[in-house]
Length: 327
Image 1: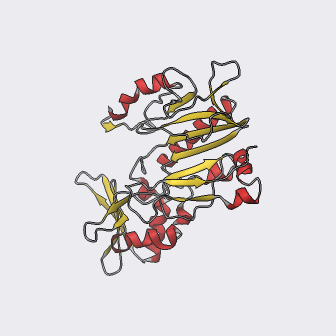
Image 2: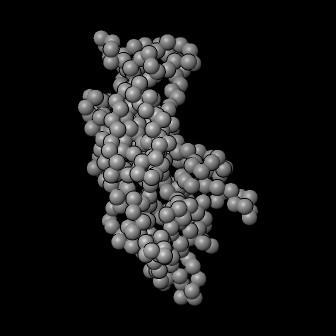
Image 3: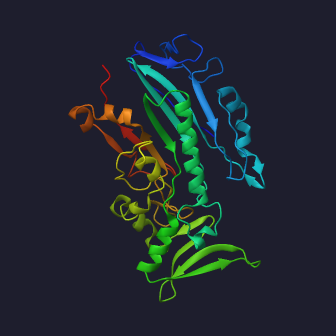
């Protein structure tokens, strides 16, 4: 799964890490740069793998780091003829100046469509989106069962949220007065969708590993830092609007997928998947109160992309910078 986090503290004296075997539940950090949370000699770390590959495959529930890492070899195994990619989370807890903080790094289900027929059927919520929502619920239940929900909780990583692509396709057809055509294989299986304008030109092509708006692709998703497509960015809405987790307003362009154009040598959105705000940072209400403790804290709040104008890989990291008052 490749999850991991680095925590840097200027002064270790007032920082304790969670340890379920100690009487107090915490132990003081020792100085140095090689301190490991979740190594085999301690248990201050909780991990869990979600459902693999698709909703039809049984769930692996690996609570503690030993089982988690021993099973890491599963991530490249084939299940039902497909390559399984493990999804899950790692959770670390600290007490800093007497306040409890839980940091979660996660990777949710990555597949945009469990069934490409959804492009035609246009369900309100895709099977893949429902699976990611279920995975978030698993995480929230774990946080509650561990007694962590009353502390400050931050959840960051690859939420892999997709745009409402079916709605986007419908709106594109209407605004461009395009006609949609189903592309089928020789045996009648649906392989993709193509939209053509009134002159017969292809304006949109969607296949299993392709999402292509042709001549306007990069411009469309960059326009206004992605604000043209922001209304389709609602997959996490039920989590956020229900108050389970909160998120700052998204005023930055989609975080993935980027590549270098062979024609221009410049960065552009790739056409293998629909660009999306896949990488996110969410938090609970307790932590939100610390972010907004006073005007000084609130003024330092920033949520956006790292290296917005520089190519650093297919995914641009998303950062939340905040100042909080602990003393």
